[in-house]
Image (cartoon, rainbow, N blue to C red; front, top):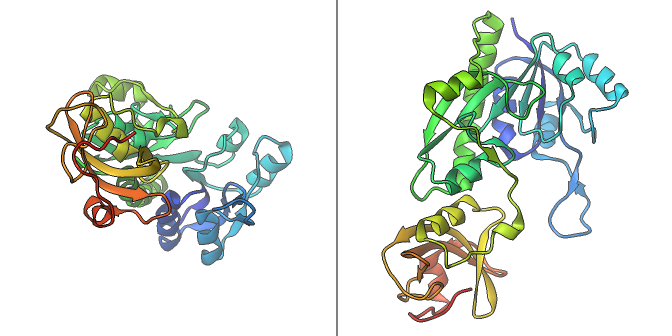
Length: 313
């Protein structure tokens, strides 16, 4: 016996989960994704989302409504007669009529250890805050923002120099494996949920909201402490990409680590991109010059000289 599953997702993060459910033999009558958006430079034609492209490859109907608030869209969703909706990084609000339509409700794959980091950017905010670990959770969706009870958890250690892009990819694979387990248990009637307030008491986790990353946050303030700067660089890699200026040009900073050193904030302390901060120093490990390719600092320095005393920012 398999479940009839409506899948709802948009970015590449969601693709492994959709693929795993399809390979697991579940009946997926439709996939919902956000509408096509222009990609790359201005003027390009709207491009289907990664989930829409994967659904088309799998031969599954794709639906891309701009909103699910209208009665017509809600009726069309209910007509699918789903056992369960699986939601992974969909990005649109699900009204009560949508949440209530599937026979067994809606399950969400969320990339944090709830109730810590509810909201839009849990991967980036966990790295930025210096969390030692994060995880993937499967929860039952309800009207609140990431407030539903949790069924399954996969905990991952965050590497000292791990970027958001790398953690994103690990959590994406974790999501797929965890959701397969969740649907197996749901089908067997053995899936159990724990309210988030009970999780908070048991683990000591506080409720924190992972607000959306704004591009205005990405410029590095070298007067901050080295740990804070290194974490922000790693958290914002690859998008939006932390940056500073060097010789009047923007330099994107894609990986860094805190290091020892002292000097005027923003000053190079050696010729290998060790930069002084308000407290300590930061070693820049991966960078990208304007119009160039991202890569290790050593490769960048083959074509650029940044001697001690150079000012950044």
